Image 1 (cartoon, rainbow, N blue to C red):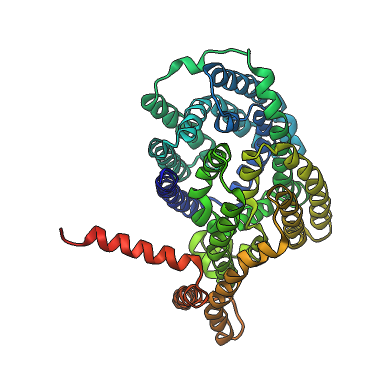
Image 2: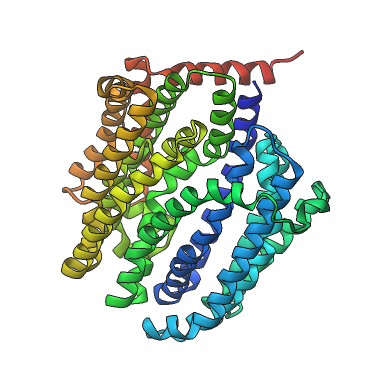
Length: 483
């Protein structure tokens, strides 16, 4: 029950934040040009790689540790502070050289301003991590929503008043300040910010593998954006980034709230000797029943989805969305693999897995961008994502004693549901002369057909989601029934 309550609070929190972020992206994409947004995209890609160094003092150490002492808490913050200082110094000093390498001097003020944000956000990171360990997701929701609302409002207001690409950096500072103040108001335990390095070896031992994993993934995620920004233009980097953003909408809507609970829940289950294998398979069944239909619907309706989410000036993103969405079908286990492996203490296996998939993925992505540019980056994901999924599941299977046929059984009903969901939108495409560029009215009707197909699929297959729908309806009836 505590997990279900946490899931409810976290999901509500994430949906509000997702809604605020969606409004922000939609508004800013109509105010700023792709070139302006591209500068921010390149800056964030650089920052993502630099910030991975902070994961060598991962806050996840505090979540998974069976018994957490004050020295553990203070030591984690102290090590994160030291690493943040090193990262900020690097950004300030290296900003001119980085800007010169991309032939974009506007990167200098952006990188130097966000280096200040890194210090400010340390406070809410520390407090929120402890709240997550204690499953105090109501307070976490307050902090996250306040930060998203502040960041969104500031970004749009600054963009409208002419701050251009710097709107994102100043909004980040405003959001970090608000979340830091609120975090201290909800938990004024100032002792946790007193520096100590007594436990640094233990924290670094855990964070060593975790930090290396995060560095590899951040570098890989940034690679196409940095390549496109350097080889082509910030405009191309912005298009690819927005294509990823649109395809991540199903992830955020379906998995965003749940993932904040997964690591604490898996860790608690592991400490209590729970059946992680059964939980993992059930989670995959639920996720694919929602995730696959949503991705296929996004692929079929990519043109109207892009028009609604970003505006007509971003229509070049739609073909990218179709390819990325299809490749993303293989990501159904990605958000589960890391938490379950970490809960079992198998962080070294995740590091080995990263050493296998990241170099191969980087070579394929680099080759694709150099040979085929923007579309090449998208098409390369059709190989990269299935390859990463296969390797990841191979490691998880060994730890959970899973068989491939058990995974196949867990997702087979979802495959039928996804196929029935897609029939309606594809029928509209065929009726429109095999054109995916549907009008708004056609897109709405196609979306209704997709929803109807999903409901039919869930009912016909007896998918576990059917029971969830029935239970939700029962709860709603009880809530509105007169006493």
